[in-house]
Image 1 (tube, helix red, strand yellow):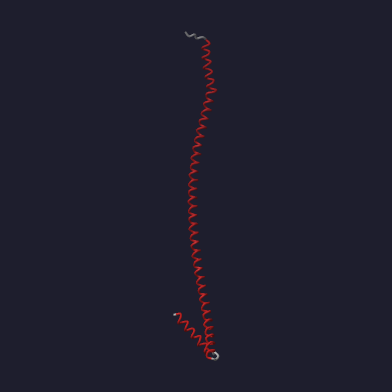
Image 2: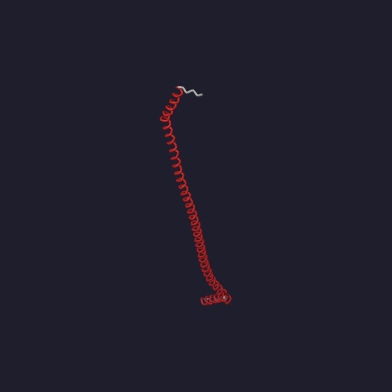
Length: 162
């Protein structure tokens, strides 16, 4: 059987006293330390969740800003291209108009010069014809003969032009 002696009871009392002392000295501080640690971890997790949500919101705003900037850049590039095309078209049209105007002035100048040369040539031909006729007839050419020869050359030229 079991033999219960005084030492057994003293050991049991010792055990309960030690249990109460350890509970008072260690269990409450360890429990409060563990509770504080758990609260700190819980707060850190909540703060991390808040920071993550803020970071996601900032990332979403950043993405929206990037998309807006890209759309704006694309719009500006298209506007620039259209403006460049319009300016190139306007420059081309102006150059063509300038070229047509220069050609018209050159043609008019050539026509004036041609008419001037033709008038000089008519005068020279008339003078030459008068001189030749005078030599053939044997008399000196007079002013009236020169006018008649010039009139004849003009009539021949007008007939040829028809």
